[in-house]
Length: 256
Length: 262
Image (cartoon, rainbow over all chains, first blue to last red; front, side):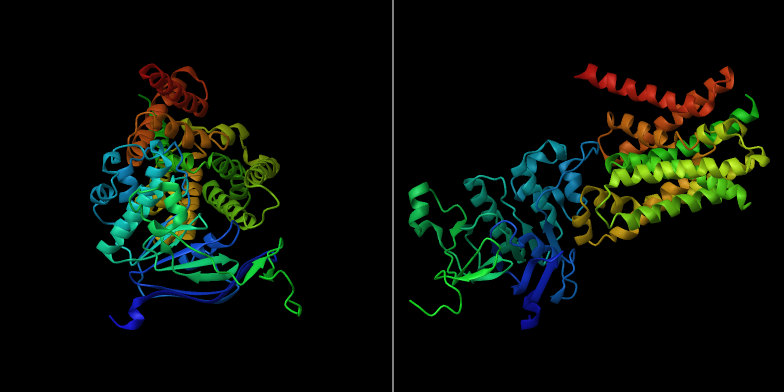
């Protein structure tokens, strides 16, 4: 594998606005094969839009989006509402994603008992796993997850992340995911990007089990697949989303 | 059995079966009002077809496709909601169709036949034309089935998985337009949507898979035509409403069995 094969997708200086509202501003990032990239940020920061840009569902005003040739993508969208009027089993829903053994992947994600259930009857947490199964069954090079742990409790979140990282080891795909939590991220994350229209900061997460806050909350519970990300911003945002330097004064401000 | 009854049964069954096949998607995608819009504006197509002397079917296909294109263009703006837009197009198409038809009165047009159908008067040529068009619809529909099902579940997921969403959506609108054209003689402009949504809704109670629902909807459509046309043939009640009411009776019966089973 050459170096260029390792890069699955690259965004270069991507900017985008909807009706004069800036959504993404000069965002650059790259996703490597087998690595996990987590994107965190406040509501309205443009996280989901960034994924849509990457998936080709949203065009950009300026900048460049390039994917490796013949890149197979497995996508787990934020929410799916399947009309009750459609009779559809979980197994069929997964099988619609492409060729592959739907039952085997559902088993791997511990939702094998649901194969014959109707897709509308399963819980939110189960649905997330079913969506994940559908994406993984496609044997993707890149897994794109939009808030996969949304509506799942902390234990369930850790378990889901653990599943994702096991699957990544088995199948070797790269992962880009948006997390709804500003601090708790998947333990096996290789890089975290904090997005608020532009990239505010990026880095690697701390080991969760060593984090005092986590130990205070959960005591000696086994490592639940979670990690804590410590932000290191050199600026804050005012109410309009404009960048304000950390000391609270304007850029031209000379005193203390 | 009289030959005109056999022709009516054939034409009606073909239309109802294909309506069931397309109708499940109309129900899943909540497009009932869309069906109304296409079929109501088909009246305008009948008038166009007569005025230009190109036959009503060609006129209907042209007018329904035109409405489809207008809808597509208008959906890009957000000042008028989608269902209001559908209503505007449905009724302006109907109004304009009634006006235009009043200009072709010379050709002995019976308005009621176009509003509610007149399946007992179809000729063998009509049956053959309907069969030909619907064969095409079924072939395209089989080819379209998987991508259409995928995008009905989630459009963005389908796009990422390689479905050409615009092409598939457009193809589906064309198929509905073709069906509307063939259904004008059977149930008429005002009742076509009923053939799309009632058998499909009745089929939901018995179906375990999307395919089963489509096949059951087609069968329920055919049974409705059998009951409706025979009732009409022996009582002189209008055939279109008889077909629609038969399917409605099956629908309510299916709901009742579901309640009893519970």
